[in-house]
Image 1 (tube, rainbow, N blue to C red):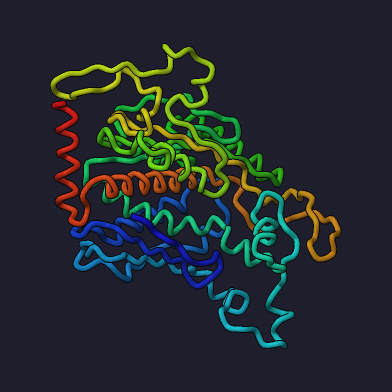
Image 2: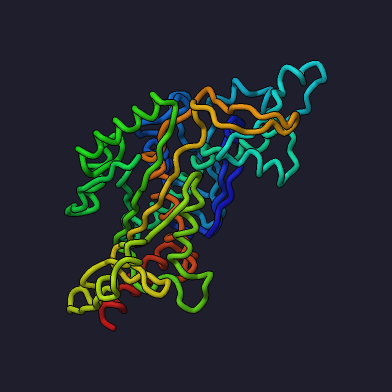
Length: 390
C-alpha cells in the first residue's frame, strides 16, 4: 500500500492517489473530512486556517461507499487559489506580466528548505521550493491517514494523539482510563493536552512567543491499541515496523526526533528497569507487565499499546528577523514574513496520528492477504487467536 501527493501550497489543489487498499472496505468522505477539520484546529495557528476550510473530493476508487480495490484518488481544493492564479499558474507568462507577477524570491529563510532545494534543483526563484516544502502538503497526508485510520478501526485498532509538551511546559497528567477518554479530553483542549493546567500554561507560552515575534515547538505522543503481535520483522532491517514509524514521524515538516516507550530515558536506566517482563493468562494470552519499550521488540509489535513520540522544532518562519544571504546579490539581509503560525504543535499531533496510522495499515496490508477486506479482517483476527493460544 502506498500513496503519492501532488500540489503546491498556493496551487489550485492538493491531490493524493492511494494504491493497494483492499476491495470492500467501507469509506465515506466524512471519514476523511473529520480528520481534515481536526488538523486545522489548535491554539497558535495563523490566518491561513481562516482562509482554507478543507474538505475532500473522492474522485476515484470508491463506489456506493466501498473501495473497489483500484487506486483511490482524493482532492482538496485550495480556496486561496483565486488570489494566486497568475503567480502560480501553469501557463507561460506574457513578457508584460512577468515583472509584475513572478515576484522572484532570492532570499532563503533560515530553517526552511529554500536554499537546499534551490541548490538541489537549480531554482533561482525559490518560490519553486517553498510552495511544495510548505506544511500545507500535510493536508493530503492527513487525508491518506484518515483512510488508514478507517481501515484500522474496522480491524479493531484505535489510534489517538495528544500534546505532552510545548515550549518547555510539560503535561503532568499521564493516566487515562481509555483511548476514548483521552480523545474526549484532548479534543476539547485548544492545545490537545490531557492536563488542563499545563494546557493553560502552554497557551500562555504561545502568546508570549507571538508577542516576541518568535515561535515555539513541543512534543506529541501517539498511542495505538489493538495492534496484533508479530507485525513487522526481525529478519530484514527495512521491514522493522518501529523503524517505519520512526521514519514516518520525522518525515513530518519540522519534526526532528522520535522515541518509543520510555525512549531516551532507557539510556539512563539499568536493563532491569527497561525491559518488559512477559506473563500469560488464558484470556489475554502473552502480554507484558509493563510497556517501557512502547509496544515493540525485535522490530515487531508485541500486542501491547504502541507508544511513539515526536519532537517538533519551533516553526522557522518568524516575525523576529534572522540573518540570511540573497542568492543573487550575495548581500546579507534580515529575513521576515507577513503571515505565520507561532506554534503548530497541536495541529502537528493530528498529522502525526495520521502518518503513524498509515504505516500501521500498510504493514497489515503487506503482511496479510488483503485483496478483499473481509478476508483481511478474518486473517488479522486469526493472528490474534493464534497468538492467544500459542
